[in-house]
Length: 110
Length: 120
Image 1 (tube, rainbow over the protein chains, first blue to last red):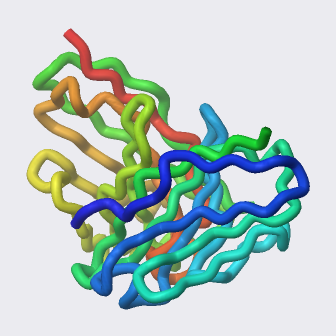
Image 2: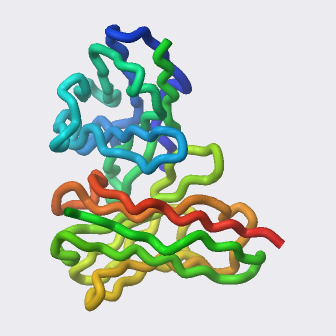
């Protein structure tokens, strides 16, 4: 199972909105509504930000939202804050009854 | 509150074995799946597989068959990852992570990670 494709880096200024894409295939992202997004600050444990494409766990700010169109899922962060600077990973359930992660995206808040 | 506490860092020689533990508390252990995730130094997250905590049935991702074994001791709410015939490329942080819901598709709670270093 190949890793999902994410941009290596994205950047934005405080207050702006950014979107991170996660592209797979009909065997994973496109075939199931089981895409998750994780935030990981350097040296820290990953934190679940979005699950089942667009659901936010309790405690995650509503500035974070998820969506999907075809084989591409997206994480949008609105009202960007400096503490949002981190690595972001998507993952998806697959037709092989497994999970696959994306390669990760480094978000820089300028 | 939900907690997953992993065993401490390990330094092993090539060819040796290691067993990482993941002790759960704050919820009914057998009600939620457990994933194992690897992160090599400076690299991304890699899903290793998951274990059904009611049945003990493990599922391994491609690349994690043969030398990797997931197991449970439900009497102490603990999951284990054993890696045999260690290689330098096994050097990584290994995370256990509990399903956010009753399936394993999203991990809402993570252990703190266990660094396994393989070096002669």
